[in-house]
Structure formats: structure tokens, C-alpha cells
Length: 250
Length: 345
Image (cartoon, rainbow over all chains, first blue to last red; front, top):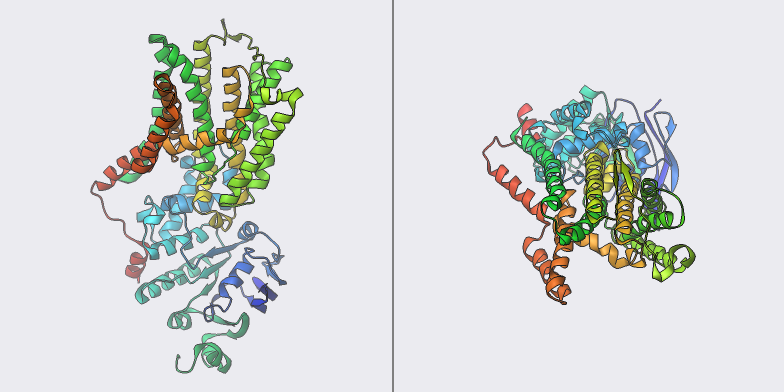
């Protein structure tokens, strides 16, 4: 059984069909890319999956449970973590407090308001461990807002990792980075995917990266899923080439 | 432990230390220097300090700007006043019920308000507070209407072990208010330093992201709203005891503005900041009114100077100076994650 089963998912903003009757299944352990031109509906699709935007039609089954109408924070507890296109962190808090907050939220430990967060040795150790995964442990006591753009993106991913997700959705994890940084970041993400045994779906615009690292590629165009398959099949798919990639890109 | 971790833990401990030192000085001061002015203004500063501190649980720690915080202050004042004037409920129980009543009112009003963001949240808190004000004015049999709860509040002597303390004595009342202020400060400190407090700060920084971490930002906002309401209720109850009654201006919208000014003057990143702000505002008002009837003008000028030149609250300014001095100290530059990822490759 697929880990994530999306059936006939649609989202209309007024007359505009942002996502139109999209169906696909993400197998457990997949490392897959979601591509498509700007405005294709990739971020909206993520918003639909994580319950941030109400769905116009369709169903989403995750890990055997119907999550179509679950709230964003419920969806997180079921095992879907998410990082964002623009680094989405807590800028005035330290890097360690950022991840600690994620650990606390995940464990619902904030319902104990009488014990000092500082004394939560297990939670802070866990947060530090997650920071080590993304090589940010050296910045633990700095305000998150003082980090470089790339490091804030990694912190954003660390926030998602702290939730022990079964499925990790990464919306352009390398946006705004130099080509070299992009490759390094993507390699790091793939290593984490392997080490932590997650399922990863990522949005990425750098086609070199996509076709190098992804096992499966799905192509979204005008809100519709126009192609799905391994890189070799996608790169020769006539429909994809015409609709999105354009002649000569590959 | 890195240099900055050590510094942070010092700052953290410092707030409690400074708070307790200040409280000890304040407790001893009227014993060695009996001053009517101090015994008169001191309780006002403390009460308004607790009120401002309660607002700061929302404003500084959760990032919610309430324009209607007087509702909970008034709820505490009227609850205590009515209970002690019209029933046989004792002082301690009345204080507890005043806090509970204010927290309950905050739960009901907050339930609606936390659904809205930013300015709409603020306007709704103001609207609800004006409803509470109207109810207070109209419910004359219970509240005394626009006259307020007149006739004083009978305060029986309190037995403390072998001693019997008459709270009508200004010194005793001063010390009682001081002890309750210290207790409120320590409890609030425990709350904001907890994992709950950690998530409140996360909500302040970025509420949407908190949802994606699996916690309800709305629920956290509501819990901060209720806690702030409870502490405001304590302040209101003490104010009712101090003035011997409860009056509609406790609930009026200008009363909601006072703690906002105090937080802005004292600083919104600590609990002591609002208490300092209350001391400055209440203290200055008391001093200036002795010299001129134009005290509003003088106070306004001071506030403008504050806003234009300091730009942050007093304690925030101090903490910032301390931090930048520490940051200037040499240390290893932190190694960024992306750079490290590149090396790893």
C-alpha cells in the first residue's frame, strides 16, 4: 500500500483551477521530485496535502488514514513534515530554541507549563542531534534570524526533521542558493533520507539536480499532473518536453 | 558550554535575582524610611506593574496586542469588591475567585479573539472590553452602575500565625501587595521559561510555522490570553482593595492603554520590564502632579522623548547593551551548515 494516496484532488480559487483532479501515489521510501513551471500548482498541492488550504474536491489518504479534512497540526502528528520555499523559522529565537520548540510541539510537551524548558535535557539533546544532522550545531546559540539564507533553509528542514516525519515535503529546499550550494544541500537531504529511512517529495527548479537525485519525477502543469515516472522516462516524454521543459533543455 | 550560552543563563538568572533584590529593598525601605508618599504610591506601582506584566504575557511573549485588557482588571476588581461587600466570603477566597473570574472571562472573550490576527484581534479585544464596560455601567444593583462600588470594602484583620495584621494599615497593605507581586512575578517567570513559554515565543515569531510543527497556534494564543487575564484579575482585585471599591474607569478603554505604555517604557522582552515601566509612569505621575497641574503635558513630553530617542523599553535597552558588549568579545565564528555540507561532500 502506498504511504500517500492522493485521489482526484482539486483546488479552485474562484474560477482559477490551481490544482485540477490530481491523483498519484507515493510509495514508502520514495525520493521523488515534483516539478513544473512557476504557477503550476506545486506549492498549492503541498498546502492541500498538509491541510493548510481547504480542498475543493478529492481525498488524501496517508498511512492508511483519511487526512482530507484534518488540520495542519493533526497532519503533522500523523507524520507529514514540511519545509518551505522561503525559510520559515523563528527569527528572534536561538537556533537551538527553534528546534527545541519543534521537539516540544511534536511531543506535546508544552502542556506542562511548570517545568523549565532549560531542564528538558532530553528535548534539548534531541534538538542538538537534529542540528548536527544539518551541520548547524555550531550556530545553536545564535538568533535564527542572523543565519545566512542557506543556513536558514537548513534550519527550516531541521524543524521538519525534529518531528520524525514519515513523509517529508520540501518546497524548493535550495531556492536562492548558488549552484554549488544547491548540490551540497541536495546531497545532504538525500543522505538524511537514506539515514533516517524517510519518504521525501521535493520541489526543485534545477533540472540537473532533479534528474540526478530523484528516483521518481512528477510533472505538474496548469494544475494537472501531466507525467509521472523515473527520470529516464520523463526526459523523453514528449508531452513533458512540449508542455514544460521545451526543446533542447535536456 | 559556549560563551554565549553562559551569558544567556546569567541573564536568565539575573532577572529573578534582580527581581528578588529589588523586592527585598522595597520590603525594607518603608521600615527604615517611613514615608507616606512611598506607602501611598508603592502599592499603585506594584498593582499597575502586575497589570502591565500580565499584558506582556500577550504583548511581548506571544505577540498579541490587546486593546481591551482592562476588562480582566475590572473583572478582578468587581469580583473581589462584590464578594467582600455583599457576601461573607473571606479575603483569600475572594482573591482566588477574582483571579478565576477574570481568567474565565478571558477564556470566553479570548475564544473569539484568537481567531483573528493582528489589528482585527486588537479591535475585537477593544470591542469586548467596551461591552464589559457597558454591562458594568448598566448592572447597577450588582455593580453600583456609574457610581461604582461605593461604601468601601470591609477588610477584616488577617491572622498570620501568632500575629494579627490589620490590612487597613498602609504599611501592612504595602507589604501584602509586595508579597503578592513577587509571587505573581515568580509564577509568571516559571510559566514563560517553561516549554509552554517556549512555544508562546514561537507563536510570536511565526504562528503559521507553529501549526506545521504540530501545535495549535490558536490554542497557544488562547492559553496566553487566559493566563494574562488571570494575572490582570489579581491586579484588579488588589486595586479594589487599595482604593476600597471598584469603579467603571477600571474597565474603561483608557485603562487598557496604561499597561501598553508601561510595557513600551519598561521593555517587552522581560517580565521585570513592565514593572519598571509601571514604576516610571506611576512614579512620575505622582511626582509631577505635586508640582504642576500640567502633569499630562510633562508626562507626554517624557513619553515622546522615550519613543524618539531610546526606541526600546528601558530593560530591553540595558539587555541589548549587555549583549552587544558580550558579542564584541572574541570567539570562534560559527561554521554554517551549508558550508559544512559542502566540505562533507
